[in-house]
Length: 242
Image 1: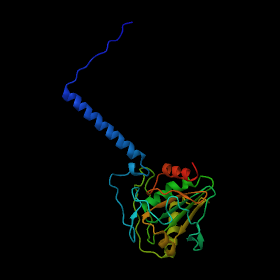
Image 2 (image 1 turned 60 degrees about the horizontal axis):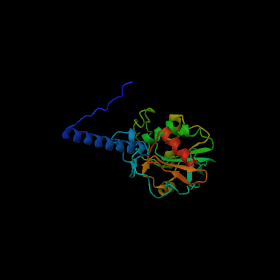
Image 3 (image 1 turned 60 degrees about the vertical axis):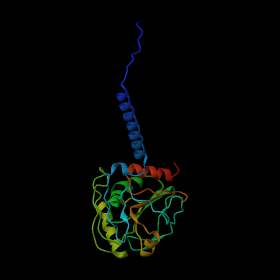
Image 4 (image 1 turned 90 degrees about the horizontal axis):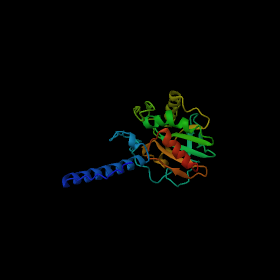
């Protein structure tokens, strides 16, 4: 069998420099891409400059690149206060439900498209996990029902519109909201309205604001906005101990 002889290729100085620059650019580009893909949240699949809608009273709608709230009840590592007073849709003052294996609390607004996406597609899937409670709390005294759009592409719906509401009006709009979607009827999904005292205490600045809480009541994950099913299931799995 003939032995293959090495082939020597001589490159001009200009070509060699050009190839080196191309390799460096490719390396940097690849590194940047890996960094973006590893970023938590839905930033990689949203438009480069996602629009945000001003929330009533300040803050922004919870587009996936909103800032995670600091302080207050939605802080990673904090013990969540399940005794926070809320109103159920029957108008009775009660407290939040707590799952034996984990809990997901979502502070939301009925008019928010991102919240609508979570309630239409994400929360019903999380509710299939044994021992998990889902607490959905409307904290925005503003009417309107968000349009979630299709499941894919995610977050392609639009906000709803409506006037200012008191707590009774929030209960009425959330009653209509649950009937409109028809996806929040699992026994471990609980829909509430936050009275003014709770809204002040929570001071939610973006919608939705989520907390994934472990069995011992510690907040494990506070994601930076709305999530797809896969992302939310990953965070719930982390909260439940891996």
